[in-house]
Length: 523
Image 1: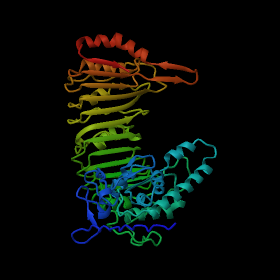
Image 2: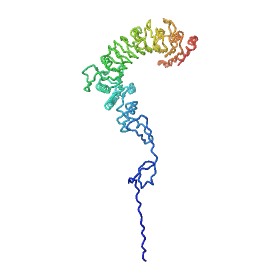
Image 3: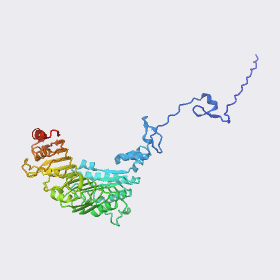
């Protein structure tokens, strides 16, 4: 059977669509995305991506936030390098160096921090009672020096706000310490502290601070330091090292911005002259052989001295001094101390701490005198401190010494508004005695707050407090802080708060009948 011939159908091809310019692609009118014209019917517009929120004022190469593998937004990466370096400055050195493993960007950030603080005092405290202290300390010292050298060599910042070294170091580490000082000077350091703390019984030779006035000084071929090497220095603290007066005076004369100077345990300072128009804070502590101290600083605001008798002090110009702390054996002879300090140039003192100084500061507003565990020779006439507003006294009552003569000092402070007494008893004290003392000539009109720390009722502190109540018209509040003492021989606890309450209920209550508005607080 013959096959019928098939009818062939012609298929007409569709002419491909083109854009007016002949292109096979066009931009979507809705989303603006480029699509093929032939597939335009299948195209579906997607939602516009949300814009990333950025912090105002933040600029840097990493502006786009990223998602962490926990799905949280990484906004730290949006911050500029300057802000990240500032954040790293709040971390310890070891904590900051650990951030180098976060990413390539963080690898070198810590090397630009502006404060380098190497403080190993906690490490020393943790091993100080160990029998093998020296061996442990030598190991920790090796680790400490290695850390400082690594950071100093890696540091890439141009300036340093603070450079502080605190560890048990001495003469045999001089080459390393000289290198660190040269690094600090090259970085225009602002605050420099070298604290090579050692025990009093240590026989190790201390580090000798270089005499920068010598022209031949080159710090072991590291480069000579010129007079302007420390021109940016604002604070200098030297602790437990050797230095001479010439080096200290060099800093004062060549550091026009120096505002704070602290000398702690620095021997060989025999004759020291402190001159500086910018100096505001001065501390001299336990400088054993200091014979003569001369101070002339028009901007000096606070002054602290803790030392020994025999230091001759001369104050030429201290018009801005308002706070002073004096303590140590220098307070043993109050007559000598007053003659040295109260010569008329410190009349403006407003705060006085009776520990080492006792008074040539007429502008002083705050004074602290620390005469604890010393037998005092009270002067007959105290100098007038017409601007003193806060006074703190630390005294000890001996067998033939009471605190009642301190009432005359309070009388010499007509503007005094706050008084704090810290008293202690010597083992020879046998109770309140009938000692000679002069009652105040007139009532105090400014004193409002009296705080008695270490108050023991059967001592002369009770008589002292009652006299204040009788001779102070403006008194508003009395705070009594009685101590608790342990007798280690009899294993008994002496609680003087019970006696303090009994004293308040009996004798103090009677004295307060004349001034019922005074508030009494027993801690």
